[in-house]
Length: 108
Image (cartoon, rainbow, N blue to C red; front, top):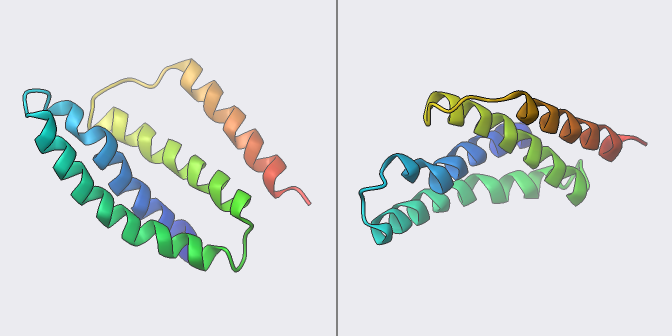
């Protein structure tokens, strides 16, 4: 559970670093790049330990697919709550295909 928690916190910061500036289109690009780098540093402070601790129990491929699913869940909430964009049916279908990938990744 520590790995999932760290990956989730990491992805929250990552999502803000990558997409948070979209609400501030009037701000100079160099400023949002610098702010995004600062946010990304915090993201790395959670991502690196998540992978380090997680690799004791999971393969690198399993960690990656776990991270991708967490990213999509975090981004879904972010796009609806922060960016005020709607999730559409095709987004949900794509997410179901990712869930299918998780099934096959963890299948023995």
